[in-house]
Length: 155
Image 1 (tube, one colour):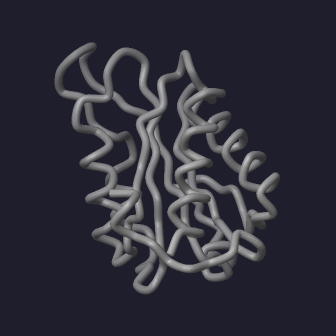
Image 2: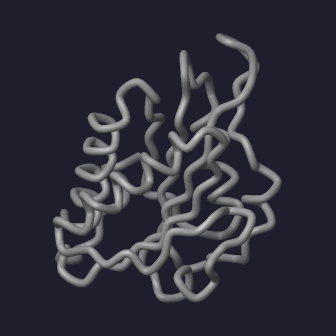
């Protein structure tokens, strides 16, 4: 999915809003780590808020909206992104680019696919997503940030 969406943006001036649903804090930590890494690439973070209580101003100001949640379900089957109904109730994001991420313990199953579909249902153009293992938050957050930067700076 990352290679499909290529816009000739310089990373200077890219603004991102981040919406997160976190149970134990892992998804929130992944969001903060990703935000820090993007800031090192001279991105501006317009806001970091909960999916249930989105900062509407930060979404409006952003070029890209990151939406993250945690995966719930049985250990190796029935996984789904949490807060899918809250994501469906987000304001319409037509004309916005978005990326999704989810944190998981053992296996994400098809949770990321379901999450990206839900984000796309808001009208946003989904440029990609990543399932982040809670045991590899640093490493996977770095991969996610690198992909985001690459997807928006490649022509």
